[in-house]
Amino acid sequence: GVAALAKVSDKPGRTQTLNFFELGRKESAFMLVDMPGYGFAFAKDEAVAAWRALSADYLQKRRTLKLVLVLVDAKVGLKPSDLQMLSFLEASRIKYTLVFTKTDDAGPAVRAAQLVALTLASVRQARHLVRPVAIVSSRTGAGIGRLQRRIMETATGTDPLAHEDGGWKAPTPVGRGRWGEGGV
Image (cartoon, rainbow, N blue to C red; front, side, top):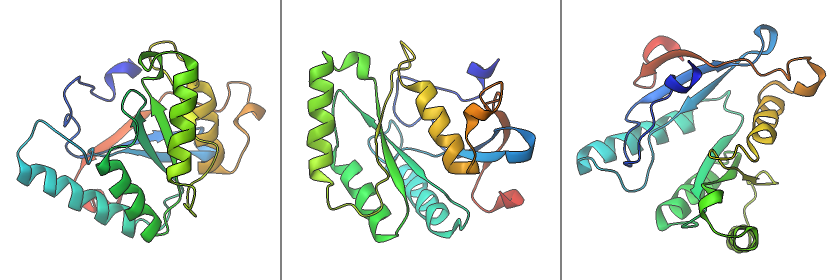
């Protein structure tokens, strides 16, 4: 099933390679790339350094890159490693947006709204931040459909709601590996 496409874990550092997924309809298919995280991971420092270098290389050299989704744990907010990533994206002139995850664990909606407001205040000078930010919950599904539509619109330039099925088809794993292998 679709749930088995991308492996998940409660332990940071599960994603250790670039994982490529083809999404969208045939005429407007695009690639979604799941990248290793840049914060804490249950892995050797050398491995984490290699992931960071791989990710930086991919982000800076991929000319067809439309948008980077920076996932932020709503229970924690922006960590120093997140701020470093945002600075990197700004310096590299790469468009990005923030996706607040685990919002069902963050407490009342008021707390989540305060966190988002605080975060936006800390990045208000961001020239490449694409607003609005996304607030999602994998547990309840809140915000997922809106995020999917936004990804489709950004990647393809088309309105996914114009399609009977919403324009969203199940992801197809294309491959995983090091950047540059296979021409992805």
